[in-house]
Image (cartoon, rainbow, N blue to C red; front, side, top):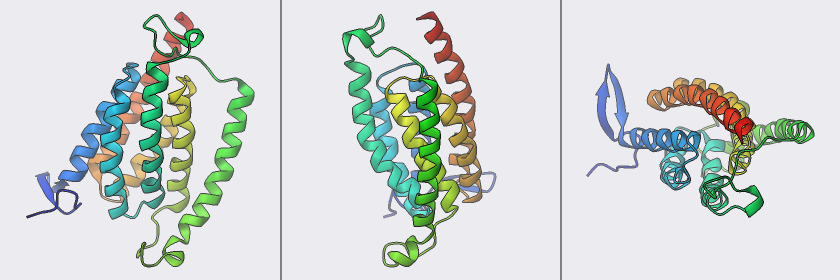
Amino acid sequence: MPNFFDIKNIFFSVWGYEMSHLEFWATISGALAVWLSVKENVWSWILGLVNVVLASIMFYQIQLYPDMFLQGFFFVTNIIGFWLWKFPKIENANQKNELKITKLEPKTSTILVVVGLIATYLMGTFSKNLHEIFPKLFSLPSAFPYMDSFTTVMSIVATFMLMKKKVEAWWTWLAIDIISTYMYFVKDVKLYSLLYFVFCIIAVFGAVEWTRKWRKG
């Protein structure tokens, strides 16, 4: 019996591209979770739990190791994010008694960018040598160690901003999504690449929508 979680277990083929069950359902769950986030739907965090489990398995199989490690972080933050959005302090609540949208202070934004770039360099260097440090776990070298590390580190930053409902989260996601679209396309998970291209559009929409709500609020 084919293993559902094997990237080689094909679900269907489109124009010669073989789509695995794993890539398909990771894509669908991820797309729905992000769209619900734009709409401030708190259940986006719960659907996100499904996505991170499927995505982590896929990333391991295509040697995107920083992305794989990132999913463990996402699993925890999806739980915390649900709690923060659903049960905010009274002074931070909107009319629906959920967390309201705010913006970062300029100083905080600068610090996050600088720390993010330093962390990218350190993680990229580590990822680049993973197959030599742990050859039994990682038989192949990491693909795009520095680009992958940038998306990993900045995804952590963007997730914390999203958990706090900061407008800047969506602009950060846009930068991440552009790079991810390229990486996944090259690694031949083309539906996931298409998903991240769609995420680029959603991120712009999210930034505009949240800015409008912030000004209105």
